Length: 211
Image (cartoon, rainbow, N blue to C red):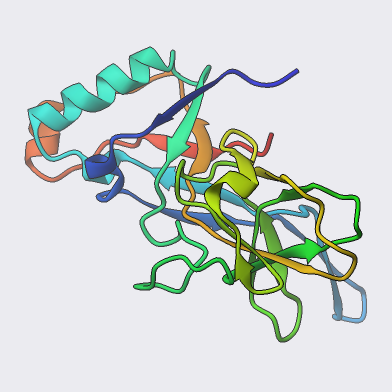
């Protein structure tokens, strides 16, 4: 059963004042010899953010309280704009349809999930992109960009459906901007207005939704 989700973005002005980033879970066992064994427990990283540092005025507090109440605390997920990681392209560059390789055609497959690759020399990581920004996705097959009517994008799942299945061996690539699916990681927000005015920020945790 899909978790309830609102296709709405957290107020952008407040996202720019937040902090956060990816988290991983690693199991480390120290052996009797002093050597250690390390195993990754999660296939995919999970991002955590804190919206508290963005609050500076009473108006900011009112905006975040209204957003929190409409999401019913932790109940409904929403979109989050990660200031430092929201594009298939390098920082400062516009997305290109050649940014990310989605796969190779086999003559029958029409549907390809959006992904973003991190690294490449030792152990590249392909991150699933499930919340592309509407209207931002560009697709190419063998280096040639497709017209907008040659494919469809499900902006709720990140799946791209091509009108015609690419030929066997054809490279499918994409460029896009994206949001992170998240929810509040608490059902309670406590804000002291005088503390906010003094620069003492409240803790408003936000966590990425994996499914």
